[in-house]
Image (cartoon, rainbow, N blue to C red; front, side, top):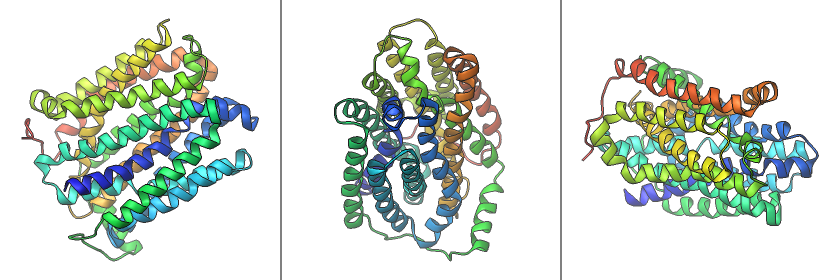
Length: 392
């Protein structure tokens, strides 16, 4: 089981590295390609929206051909997509490569969580997912920090080149070490896919879980492409500071993974959701204050800790929506999450242009706090199972 989590963690690391690498260097990309920051921010949506849309296809495919096979295939095509991003001749070429990378990155993290759901008992599952989540967080942190630093020294194309090389190595490891034992297989057909999605949506909890995770993606991650221009108002000067700040969000997730058992024992999963939403909301609200950029970085760390308190509980709930169609359930979960992330830059770009960045972060902060409290009331009474207050 440790080997399984390790290999799945490496795969999740690769997907997350490519996802977050773009955010801190958007101003650098915009200047090099001759486009505005708002247009460059769409490169984030070019990864996340196909990620979300392809879940409707990849979920049933994973249930049909096997989740391990889907993860291997997705890593290979992700490598190709990120490599093409590094050599795209212009804005359109880079955009197309990001679309390809995002579409197949969607076959990694949801399938990995579904595989954990298949092989780990429910009482231990949130802890097991948190171990996998740690690797994903490290990927996000590395993607942000490395991109911010390397882009200023070697350019943004070098960042995508490094991501492609890293993902290629991880794909080779998965080919050798990720085995298909004990994995159920099902026929691949449109009718079978409809039946599996219907079994997931028949659970009365599902609509609230998916709505909550979509709101998480929009409210919390939708602001990430605007971190660099926001930090300029706090005294930052370039992509490096943006990379450090976005990486601090991931560091908050690392801290969460270190204390998750203790938090579950003291707060339970529903208390974690409430506290997590409040922490994230208050941190975003505080970013509107006239403080130096290192303070904003610390606030992002707090926001990251709060987010993972909320999100890890949602991930665990998603693994229980349908025991016979976990791949499809986690695909819908990821689709909702990344649909929210993909919509965020588009919506927030309009808000920032009309009302300014301070209003953007203030509004997001209020809504995140409301989300954490409100989601508990909507989901708790409908869930079919509950995690014991102590996981071990």
